[in-house]
Image (cartoon, rainbow, N blue to C red; front, top):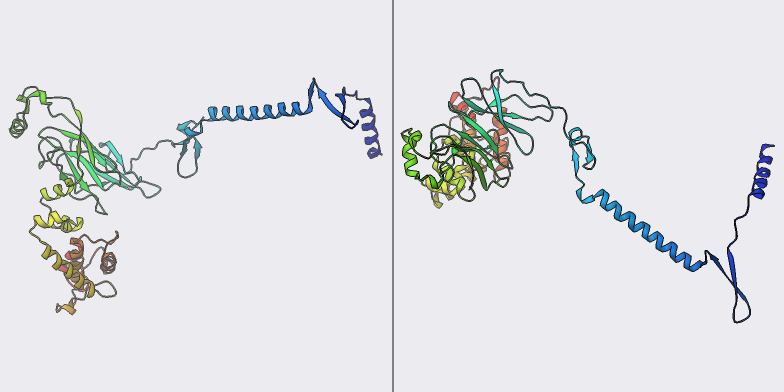
Length: 408
């Protein structure tokens, strides 16, 4: 019944609705006597009205587009993300809640009396280096590694620290170079800037920058550009207007009488120096490197170091042939069998370690693309497999084998 009533009610309501005034119709006669209707509304014919509607639509679209561009400013859209779950557009975003979590103190492994200063984090976020010291005033550098969830325990940078102060750590863009300031002996005097290179496991023995940077005065707070070509630093060296020559300043520094030199600057200015090109080889040559450092850094493969140590092109050819001989006599498991060369059996550990040291001297490594990478990697794997107990690497040999294996 309800289904029948609904159409009836709709018909009644339709009949009761007043009709809208119809459009006026102009009737015009054509040439053959027929009639052509042309409807008008507000005195405008249909074609004219359609043109007006089209222009209004185009105007609305253009105005809306211009307003959207001016308001939204798409060229200023920056995304902030925590690389895990949050990604927001910069517009109308509270950065404090989008980018950062609540800060937490990293206190594990720190002594209460120590202070933390001048923290430096590598560009990939995996290394943290900072200066810390106790009440005795001796500041040292420490390294912490990020494992993906937490910072590891602080490790003293033994190759860099001394009985003097090490401060102001600064990393290069790729993290391979570490610059820091120290008042240790071996520099030009006062605080000098030192440099160290990452060797794959730690930052190796440091070298002082040359006189293009260091002076008998204080140089500190180094910062190297991402490309590693320019270093910025602060220094309290005198201006030329102070009328103190470098020779005079050096004599005063040696006699520890800088306080008696007139017009000495007590504030610090910002300086820059170009360390591109031959700067780093110069640093290596100026330093009397230990044999271990030379081998681990591949310094012997450098042409300038080779000349400094009395090498020649002929000696380099001989070394290349010697390495090829080692490659030809390496066993499938990665070791070198000393008995095949006329040596006493049971000392394959020493033979393998010595062979690896020869490759290191040419700059070959197990963790970087190079000519003999596979040979070095297999040799190291075999050496590590000989380790028993708490680090015993003698194998079938004696402590001699263990010592050489530890160097390798």
